[in-house]
Amino acid sequence: QLLCAYGAQRKDLLSSSPTDVRAWVLETSRWSTPLHHLDILTPIRVRQLLVGGADVHASDGSGDGAPTPLGLARALLARDPAHEGASLVVAAAAPWSRENHALFPAHVRARAAELLRLGQLLVREARFAGEEVALLDVWPLVMAHALSRSMSPS
Image (cartoon, rainbow, N blue to C red; front, side):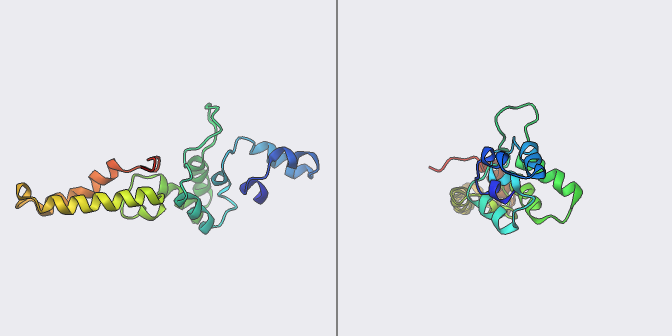
């Protein structure tokens, strides 16, 4: 399992592996990213993958119910509510917030910092006089709509 999580070719594991390993390889044949293996990854590794831009919605492209890391994380949490790696994936899949900011790729976090500065500049505008607190209260919601894990670096 760990070999596949770090990119080993599944076909290489089929020929000379014990029956239970071959069964697992076939059962997980639609897992297409390291993040699909979150049940055996450490929380540190899951966090590294998420910050590195891993797609929580990744699938093998076939559609028809192909597993995604997010779907696997939700299923894993149903069995083990304390699973840290699965909790990280679910948190990373949520819209941007202060709470999950650290799980986003670096370019998204940088954009969040820019938007935060923009919000600070806007509250200093004369047209928002008397509404500064309201603008600052709503600004995180604006940011959540403007930021996503799938943003391309610019």
